[in-house]
Image 1 (spheres, protein in one colour):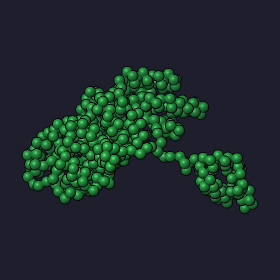
Image 2: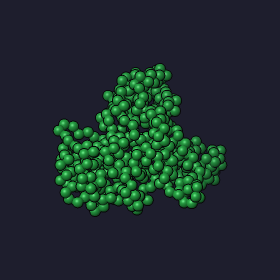
Image 3: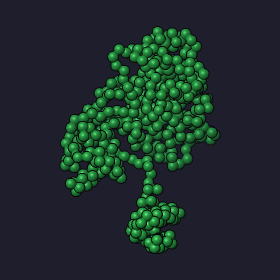
Image 4: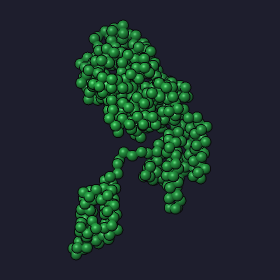
Length: 455
Ligand SMILES: *Cc1c(COP(=O)(O)O)cnc(C)c1O
């Protein structure tokens, strides 16, 4: 137990030259706490038979505790997977204009609920809603935290304790535990399914509409396809039969898009204007899927319904914050100016030609002198356009223990997330942002150099 006496005191450690830096970086309290934790740790090490640590070991241990405590878990990564709307990687990266708007509204006071011409209280709801009305031609709009919240709010406000008619083929789960039947239950609405899993007819709706109900809902399949012997009326047909019975229709578009995906070599994802033109009464979609903006849920539609939705107490509980509203407005402005494809990262990525992707992959290969350039496929992700792909070119690397290499790439300061296919590690230029390219090449170089040394 004599070894314990070789352990320095807190007072002694605070005299170390490194202490000054710790205190200036992390503060005195946290430094003292880390020193005490370090001493506790080495005390128990000694009790289990180890020698007392030297200055360097103590210093390293304190340094590690401090940097772990202060390193955030939410950090930027380089997405080389080729999945454009990667939900686990934060879905849509935002445009520069969007970031600037969020930055200035976040760091200053703003007109969030202040009317400059009267000098009196204004409404938070005017900001993104005016531009949404202009873009969609809808009578009214409301923005909430995300589309899952939007669906819950619409059902709670319009269909509590009442029947909501929906096709069996649309009782979807979109991941993250969002299941339409569960959301209905939560809202207090009563699910009334019509048709079968693969086939639903207008007459199925007609039959269900004989009984009293509050709403007919259509949910976009989003992340799956049903094929073979299938049938489902289109939105216009659903609206027509429902309106004959005086019942409004809600269309949950999921992703929703202002641009026609078929112009980019993809199949046609229902657009927001398709739903408006089909005369749906309430339409909801996400802000951070194909729209390419910050996380938000957008509800547009006829004033009578939107007003009821706005007045529901849940609306207050899921209202968006000022930074979201600033960012959403800036992203929507790109659509208003007809510059979405040039300015919104999601659309820049989707619209890239395979020849420019090939050039970029070859540039990487030349720089790194590693791997081969191969044709491959990017996907959209984010619960939109299932099974749809875009032709791309990747840098493909064949190495022993690819899982370990992937792990090393993830442990970089600016982590690189790649895709593993047939034991090859693939890097797709489509989803690597231009401003990340230097860090990307630097990171890959570092890992490849390390691997060479190990061999
Ligand atoms: C993605 C999706 C949602 C949920 O949207 P979030 O913005 O992720 O909350 C709801 N419904 C459908 C059909 C979806 O595709």
